[in-house]
Length: 413
Ligand SMILES: Cc1ncc(COP(=O)(O)O)c(C=O)c1O
Image 1 (tube, rainbow, N blue to C red):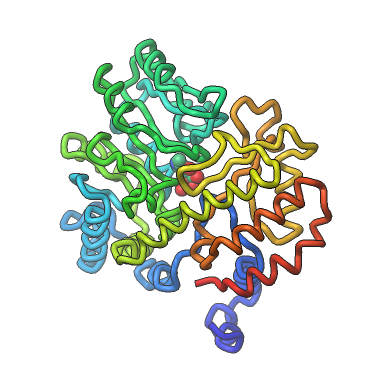
Image 2: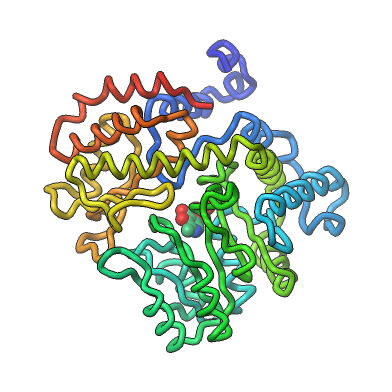
């Protein structure tokens, strides 16, 4: 949208204050580089669908079985989104596209499989898991009797530890997946442990969903009873959640989403998901996802060239986790310094981190958003040089011009 078009938009005329904030966000995204591993830039088509008039529509229930009149269009959109999701994730029996977020998807799936006060086992937040895998401050740590596994000294999941914990705790649900785990997860091995102890296996692929949809990473579909994910990270769709389920659990999953955990679905977001899934079915999507991984591996190499330590020594996916413990810096300090230079990164705990979560000794970097902007090896190297300099204590001001040049050379979609 040109500046003139933006300033004559209904929002701008009616509410310049909100319009002003949104324009500032547009500018912020254009003039900073997003290296936050859980963020991406969805297409204008996805954003148009999410801002459409169907936001007005109540559609409690599922296609063909709604509690309101006038849902024919909502039915068409939801059926299309479900069909496309099933094409993307071959082998799943059904898809529920209604979860408002990844956390809702997990809570709803866990309640369906474990029931209130049920037992669950997941990876701890400190080791790279997600809050919604049983952390004590999440409802999943309150509603369920949760035990958590960690990672070994190298930062890798220790399947013997997982097996011992499952043998001891006998959970109804074993969870595989994480938020800052940068290596391939052996879903088949998790499946064996779950089967041996008669637990359901829930794989949360919120982070690598796009990589898995493109076939760049192995899929847990077919091994897991339920697969949950977000649609806004590597999958590059609108903000939201998605649950894939095998036939034997589908009824429980669907009723746990609605009426269990949610009311009316956000049909405008479901429309955005349908558009994003359509994009992910195009041939170019695989090349994009391969580039995401190639860029992350190259970023990892360049950072090692700056004498930085990486958890697990490198990456198999879109995430690089820098361990700052041998430097003078904390995650929080680098987050602030990077932002001053024009890079949005996030502080993150590293395995065995002695520092609290608001400080941390780590830095989580991700390549989905900058790859969407068309970053190649030279541009990735330039970003690594900025981070290397910031960790060495160089002035962020010194890097501002270089970061702005990179932003201008790689516009937002
Ligand atoms: C593995 C994992 N699961 C679930 C979520 C939660 O997603 P949301 O923020 O949409 O609730 C995240 C978010 O980062 C995640 O990394």
